[in-house]
Length: 121
Image: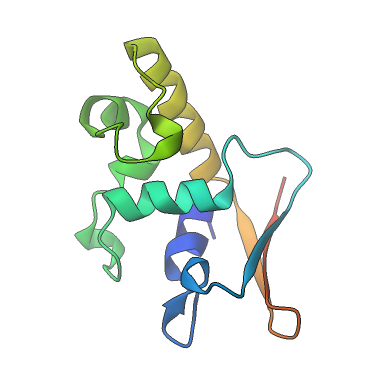
């Protein structure tokens, strides 16, 4: 699955893992992300309707950097506020798309309360 799917579709007792305060999100990867999983989750939360099927959401917000640059309100998330120029917004949007479209496997360690994102790099 892709990272944006893992962040929006994996639930535990009907709660998204990012919404569970006692769970830690741990990425396991060889190539670093541009943004933390929590930052990416907040971005997705700002642009996609929670609980919606894929055909009900505008997935251009996770797959198309130009669409993001033209349509995203960059003041919605802390990590995007600093992108003031058009070039900064394009760069940020490309990084968002690159991160959200990486392939991952998900492991829920219920004993240690860890949500592992295992990246296939």
